[in-house]
Image 1 (cartoon, rainbow, N blue to C red):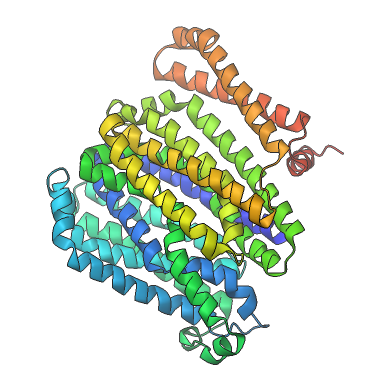
Image 2 (image 1 turned 45 degrees about the vertical axis):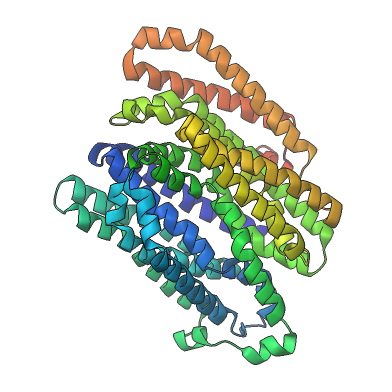
Length: 508
């Protein structure tokens, strides 16, 4: 766990630096210089790119992690990186062809409620390509246990590039057309940076990267297994991208302005799953190796450990956001226009907690020989639930329904996944300390209600205005956060957390 911990901490720093920049950009730049419709435009384009790039990848990212231990032989990788470049290109060609064939029906679907999107539809395939290989090169770095720089590029670099585009457009130095082009190009620049970094750390030249060792594939009889895995995982990777479908449904069934409100609210909720982006990326190769070696005791230990700490961290972040949501919307420019997204933050935040805490179960099952029998039907069920709930709940609850769709879908999917893990693999990622975390957080929300009844009226009445809300939020976060941390330490929820805190405080 030394490498995992070290890279996770560095990756976490990159993630939270990106969150800080994203917070500033989303709340103090976007809401000031862009209309809700323009924010919705960029959000729908990016979500479409991320969703279809995951399909274009043809499962290569999961395949690279699963099969890398079988291909690595000293400094030789037997062409697995060549496959990671070739297969996504095939997938992208198929997706681009679908976009071309169904161009008119797609444009018709969005023409009534989101006509601005139809003006830039032609840029979406380019954005898909950039997002696709950005992730491919990032995964390549993760299997080499070097995730910090790619995370910095994704979480910080793209946001800085976009900030430049936002400010140029906000100060009317460029047109809307130029802004959208710059916005999309930022992902292309990030892709190139990740590519050059991966070339450097692998010690391979471009010619080596393009090489595929077909003889090795034939000798090891891996090609058929990899082909089947790639085909099935193409559907399975949609699990992590389920929330992206919601903004696409909002753009089609409501308006881009509604998608803009949803975008600002979902950015807040997305902070909940930031830790999993680094811990998950660096723990997957270790779990893949443990599964390959048949070390199920280690798989159980890692699964419980990752799930526990993800639940603890994600719930703590969710708690801080939930108790300060009114203050957040009061601080941002035109906050009243976006305040209708408060319930989106809460509902989608819970969905992020569930996904962050239990996604390690999907990772474990993916790397076993049972993946093609078990994950496919579960994932197809998840996709159907997401489409069904979005189509039904948006008509009833609007953007709140779009947020509820992934929450309900995840509840069904992960409930069945936990049963499958226990029945087939005898693996459980659920432990008693997780129940302790839920109880502690429940007490925290109870204390927050009491604080709102007794303390908040006094503070806001004494100071008044936004200043009073800020003081109340800071005091509440410090006091209640401290009590939660004390509860975690006193109840000994996690020996790792206790050890880290003692080291920080230098308690022997």
